[in-house]
Amino acid sequence: MRPVFAFLLLGLLCACQLNHANVNPESEDDIDNDFAEFDDDFVEASYDNSATAENADSSKGVPGGSVSKENVDAPIKRTVNNDDDDDDGLVENDDEFEHFQDEEEFEGYDAGDTMEPPIDQKTEPKLKIPNIPLHFRTHWDSYWMEMIMVAGLLAYFANFFAGKAKNARLAQLWFSTHKALLDENFALVGDDGKVENENPGLIKESESLYTLWCSGRTCCEGMLVELKMIKRQDLVSLVAGLMRPQLDQAHIKIELSRGLMDAFVFAVGSKKTITKVFKEYTDLTKFCSLVAKPEERYNVPSGFGVLSEIPEATSAILESRVITALNKYQSYIDYLHISDQFSGQVQQEEGSTLKQPETKAVLLAGFNLPKHAQMETIKPLLLLIFYLMERLKTYRMSKEGKAKADKNRLRVEEEFLKSTHAARAEAAAQRREDKRKQEKERVLAEDDPEKQRRWELKEQKRQAKKNAPKMKRLAVKSL
Image (cartoon, rainbow, N blue to C red; front, side, top):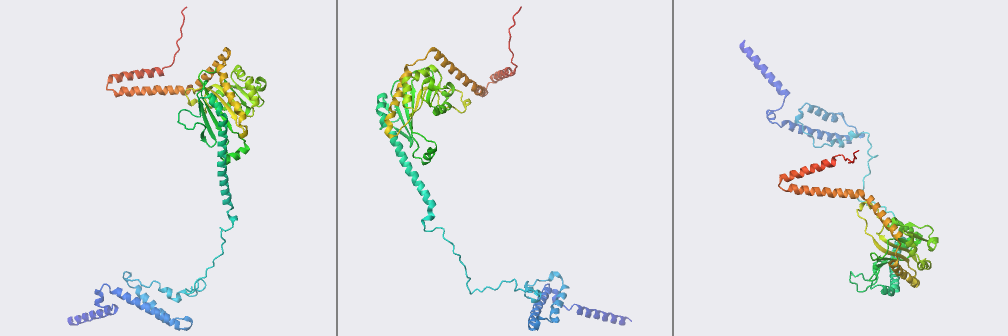
């Protein structure tokens, strides 16, 4: 029994071995090789590509583009068998876009409707160049804007040189007309004595402003003449002057000697100018009042206004000779201004100044200049200025007039002090505070504790006295 059992066992083992060889036909070399399955995949992929190419060739040869079932099923069956393999051993095919070459993938798609026709590279493209008109033509009509600008510039520069020359001729004519009279009354004409001037005379400040300084005469410190011409060199100013006519003027300012004249303020001139200077100058604003009906009261020409502080002083200045000159040269006299409290124009912020402005005695005059041929006609106006200087030197007011003038000046000073009281109090408090700070720094700088202690005690007493309520002491008489 034992030999029979052994023989059956050996036969069973041989049958199992044969069955295993049929199921897994791989060789032992493939088992040992780790990359055997990659080689199989590469072989299978090659087989699939060759099968696909053969199917494509065979489909072209078949009428109607039909493909046999065997050619289509062959790669499909091979692909199904490949799915049983391990995914980790798959290698992608190099030709990723192989399906685009397969015409069966795009059945029913008409590529000719949307695809652009092929471009023949041998033929050159035809370019259509439109006819664009040139902006810059050769006709002069195209440059009318530039021509206007050039003409405007030429007109401006031509007017500049012409107006500049005319103003210079007018100023020189005035100086030559009055030079003899100025030399008779002043020791120095055209020289202020500060800067060496080889050719004394008019000083050109601008194209429309000339100045002349004269000194060396009694009753005055000096006389400044300003010739303010129309800005003829400026074309824009000339056009603006058509709407608001202007005149060439000579402004004379004489600084009178201190104590020469009595204390009063006075002005006479055209109503337009008097109204203007009444608002601009401080002395006229604070001391004078506009006289009503000056033609009847002082016999001044119609169209003239008078600003007066002391009536008797105004009557003394506007005597018969002055009234005659005002009537004769009414068109040339712009204003006459006499003041012992002249401080310039009105300051916009009076509270900012803690001191009263410095005042001085002056004689101001403004004359309109005539044309070239009539320059000699205004020569007597300069004689009128010299006459007024001598008149101020000899005239003296009454006691009532002086008392009224002193009262007016005291009133103006009090008004100034009231307007600047807060500012002055603040400035004084600031000075005291600065003084205490300096004293404290000086005490702390010393190495004396006793002295520092006494200063702190003194400061505490001062603060306690400052914060204590104020009490008024009353004297009570005993019965």
